[in-house]
Length: 325
Image (cartoon, rainbow, N blue to C red):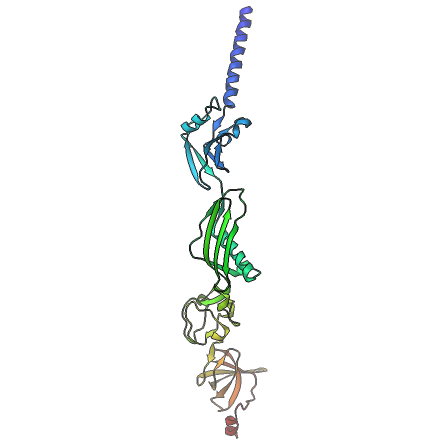
C-alpha cells in the first residue's frame, strides 16, 4: 500500500513538472517575423511578442528611414536581447523585417497646397480653378505619422507672370518647388485640323484646361455646343473654339437643285426647284419653282430639302414681281 501511494505521488509529481514545462513553453517570448515601427528606434516590444511591459519600451536598434524597410539578422536580435530576456523562441527565422511607418505626401497633395496659396493671392474662391505646373517633378515625401500638416515656410508668388517659389516643411522634412500657377478653366479644343466647311464630330473635340487669359467671351466650354456645327474657317489642332469660329452647316447652296415639298391640309406635293440663296437647317430662303418660274419661300429641312407650308406663291423680290407682271 505504501509502495502504491509512493508510485502515485511520483506520477503526479512528474505530471506537474510536465505541465509546468508546457505552460512555460506556451508563455515563452517569441520573435515576430515582420514589424512596423512608428519612431526612429526599434524596441523590444516591437520585436518580441508576449514580453513584459517594463521591458517592452527598451530601445535596441535604430529604425530604417521613413517609409523604408530593413532587416535584422536573428542572431543579432538574440544577442541584443540577452541582457533582458533569459530565453526566446525564434522558431526557424533567419531575419526580422522592420518597416518604418510614414505619412506619404505625393505630387497631387503638393500641387493642391500650391493651388490653395495661388488662389488666395489671386483672390480666386475655388483652388480647383488653379492649374499648377512644376519646373521639376515633385518628390514623394515621407513624414512621421504624427507630423504636423505640410506647411509653407517660404512663399514667393508674382501674379504678373504667375511664377511661384515655395518651400514646404514638416518636422525635419523640407522641399522647395518652383513653377507657375494660373487661373484656368475647361475649354473645347480640336483634336485634329479642320478645313472651312467641315462639320465637327464628337471625335474631333476634347476638353482641356486652358489659362483664363486665353478665354474670350464666346469661347465654347461645352462639347455639345460644337458637335454638328461647321467651321467658318480653317482651324488647327489644339485650338480653342469660339462661337464665331462656327456656324450651322449649309444644307442648301445657291444655284443648286432642291426638292420642294408643299404641305397643305390634305395635300402633299413634291416639285423640283433651284435655291436662290444658301441655307442652313431651319433657315427660310428663296427658291425658284422650276415649273412655274415663280420665286417662293420655304424652310430648309434637310440636305437639298425645302418645305413650303402654303400653295400660294409669294413674290420674294422686286425682280420676280416685275417678271410676274
